[in-house]
Each structure stands twice: as C-alpha cells, then as structure tokens.
Image: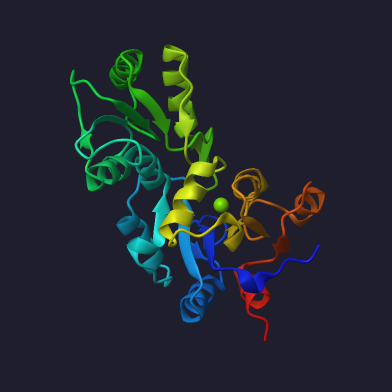
Length: 268
Ligand SMILES: [Mg+2]
C-alpha cells in the first residue's frame, strides 16, 4: 500500500529519540523543522513529560541549536488540562498531583488549583517527584467525593540522563487508582487524548491529514494509528531495525532518522 505523503497537513513529532538523545541533538532534526516551516507543514513537538513547561522545553532545545517556539510544543500536561477545560468552566477547582508544568498548564487555562482540605471537581495527576501519602490521601478524598480523575500519562518508567530508569507517572496513577477503584482517563501517548489535542492545536486537522513521527512502536506508532494518524517510525531512538521489521501492523514508513523524513515528504 503506498501512502500519499503530499496530502499531509501536519505532523506530531516525539522529542526524545527523534529530535534529541539526552543532551545531544539528532542531526537533521533542526533542518526538518526549518523545512516544515518553509513548506507550511504544521507541526508540534510532543512529549508525555508533564513536569516541564513548553517554555522550558523550548529553552532546552535552543541550547542544542534546535530553535522552536513554546507554541510549537505540546506537553501531556497541556493535553490533560485541555481535556478538562473542554468539560469544565474557567474557575473550576482542580487538585493537581504533579509538578510545576502541570500546575502552570492548569492555571494558564483558567482552572483554580486547590491545596489543603479544599474540595475539587477534578483531580489531574502526572509525575510528581515529591509524591507522598498526604497527596495520595488528598487525591483519594477528592475522587471518592465525586471528582473526575484524569492522568497526564501512565508511563511506568521514565528514562533519565545516564541511561537510568526512574518510576514514571503511571506509578502514582496506580496508587490513586488502587485507593479509589476509579479508572482515570489517561490523556498522554499511547491514548488518543494527546493526539486529538495536537490535531486541534494544528488548526483542527482531521486525523488522516496528519502523521505521528516517533521512535517507539508501543506509544508513538500504536497510539498514532489508534488516533487515526499516519505513522512514521524513526530508528534514532529505542527501536532497532529488527524490531521495526517485526512490527505488525507496520508503521506507514520506517526511516533511519528525521533527515530521511525530510526526503520522504519533500523529494528532490
Ligand atoms: Mg521517544
């Protein structure tokens, strides 16, 4: 089956393993983004990381000579807050289990983040590296009291610099879920929420007008496909060529890196 790439209007691009690895930019990434801007292909750089802000991500990328605007970044915190905002008025009280990025995203969208004993209509949970029993108890109380439960993502582990893995947002989500027996709506990859939010932010594109570019089969490719997007797997991250060859169903394209995606979308 051949894919008509010329009809593509927008792409969602995963960051780690696609645009950079650790602190190192992946060659060809900056050129791809420049070319996308020049050709009018909309794009958003997406991350399941809910602890950081788009400003911070842009600054970090700038340090690698990949120049992007905060408005070109979509975090799972923004997507989770967007999910809530489509269902709740500004001024709605929310309880956040998470870090600065999630709190900031909620406040920017006009939600009121409550602490202490205050009641909340929503609990929005993500990675919180200061998670403790008190936060678990407060989130549990809110949900048992009728608050809706939304999670930024359910990643079990999170890679950190130096190749280590640390517990991810999914571990905190699981604790709250165990306490309440309430299943959260998970927004981040591979769930459709983040993809849907991305399509909306790219001017309301239909899923088939967009593609997801990522380095993981289980989140980027499966998630993108489930949301109805075309999928491009790049081999600059965690997936090996052998693993890619066994993927069933396969991505719409498997390419060495973003430089090759440039050549695929805009053949010379
Ligand atoms: Mg990745």
